[in-house]
Image (cartoon, rainbow, N blue to C red; front, side, top):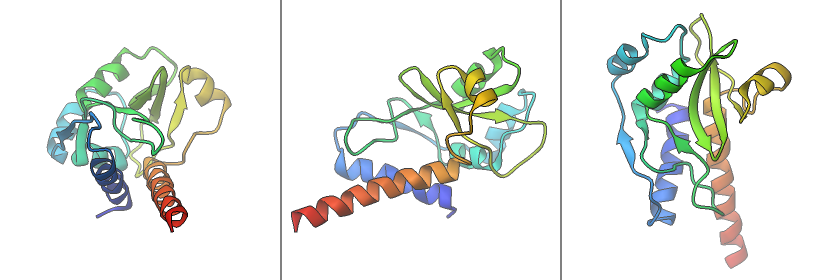
Length: 163
């Protein structure tokens, strides 16, 4: 299991165990062939870790990525929804949305080259962040590993306080 899948499984399992009333309903993952057939209409490549994300789960019906202090951090777009939003984008670059928090989107910028990873940006005005700022995370894997570590550290801290 890769680092991305391990982190996603940790987050999902933590949520199921610690937030049993959380409304998230995750869709089943897709095969690589299905992902490839759906994204071939895009004018850019997705990095391998995005393939892995959609093989793990195909988005969620309700918000996912819980935060220990709140109900959710982000809505996870199902693949068709992300493709539709990407095709509607009229900017100077190829935006591919992954998550959304209120009005702020987490997205990658598609390229004409195949890659393993892509930087994750987050902003409600994508043009500003891509042109003027560094990405939020260098990759989706690192972003999810950081989230899993944050949750794990919270759990350890709470346990230490209990002792």
